[in-house]
Length: 107
Length: 107
Image 1: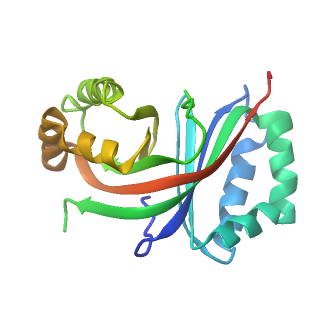
Image 2: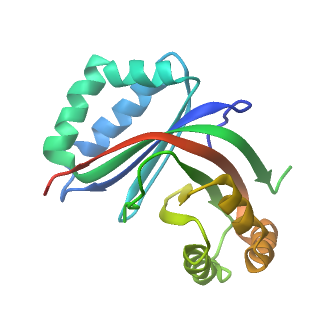
C-alpha cells in the first residue's frame, strides 16, 4: 500500500534494516507494532518492503508525534528486543517531506 | 545495503511504487538507473526493497542535485516508460533528513 498522506509538509521516519537469521517472533511483532503506531496521535501512514534490506517509512504530522511514538512504552520494550535479537544493523532517518507528487494509471 | 550517508542535513527522495504485471525489461532498466544515479553530482546513496509495494530511497546533498537528476535526459526517457509500462501507481516524496542514528550489532 502506498500511504495516503496529506498535503506537505509532514514528516517521514525512514527505517532501513538488515535482519538477523530466523524469524524469532519478528513478523508477528512487526505487525503488532504497525497496528500500535497507527493508533498514535499524528500518525499519517506507513509503507514497508523487505528483501536483503528492509525499508519501513512511517509518516507523521510533526516531530512531536514522532517523539511520542518513540517514548511509547510498548514500542520502547520492542525496540530493545530489536537490538538484542532481530537486527544485525539499522539506520533511522527523520526527515521533513517538503514536496510530493504521484501517478495513478487508472485515474 | 544500508546507505552510508554523511552527517545531516541531506536530502532523501522516497519513491514508493506498485508495479504492473510482468517484468517488461524493468529489472534491467532499474539496475541501469541505479548505476546512472550513482554517477550524478551530489548522489549520496540508495536503498531499495520490493514486495507488494516497492520502496526506493535515494539520498542527495541538495535539492539542486535532485533537480539535475530529474532533468537527466536518459532518466527522463526512462521515467516516461515507467508511466506507460512499469507502474500501476507511484508516489515521490522529497524530504530533508534532519536527524539520523544507527545501530550495528557487530560494532
